[in-house]
Image (tube, one colour):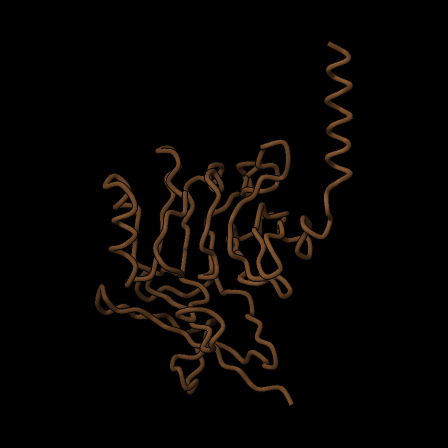
Amino acid sequence: MRKIYYIFMIALLLMLASCNLDDVGLNNKIFYYEKIDEESIAIGNVIEIPENGAVFIPYQIDSYNVSKLGFNSGLGFGGNGYLSQNSTENMFTRCYIPCSVNSVMGGYFKFVNHTKIFYGGKAFDLECFNNLREGNELYVLPSEYDSFCEIYDDKWHQSIHKANVIYHLNNDSFEDNVYYLDYYNDNELITYIPPIPNRDGFTFKGWYMEEECINEWDFENSKPSFNTSDYKLVLYSKWIKEK
């Protein structure tokens, strides 16, 4: 038995020694990640849950696109490759996913309960309804709502909703140019503001109500008025070309 133990420990050390630190690392101590190829990476667990409980999955890290959620960090276990909540004092309440993500590892959300998940891309199975006990809610683009309902069983349809706030990148970086989605009640102040987007050769200058960027949205005082169930607020990013 002791011999088997030593063999196991030696194999484990060899495995750790062979790990390429360029492939698995940290994004400014915010997320664990794994390199997929020369253009994309997979996002794992967040290092520390923000105080407001809202996690924004980045659409890029350095020059890599974030195309997948979750990875196996060794020996077939998820490790830091999936989201987890280690205490009831600081838990996820919201998780924002950009349209660059097109794949999710099974079980990525298995330790995230009663969380609002916002996804701004085309319909596919995000694996966010793994167990009945989770109570997660999924918010999607209005144009993708029916497609998401076709993917998930009828029992989940009441947990799928149309987002009513859309952040538009206003450039040609990604298909449909959706940065993040959100949902608010009528005349409710927008309190979860996305991180500042990046664009090579340009400087971000705020969120505006028109594609032409005429009227800037005032997050401190403005409240969206959703007069009908089909109304949505689209905010466009303004860019100034660097000299």
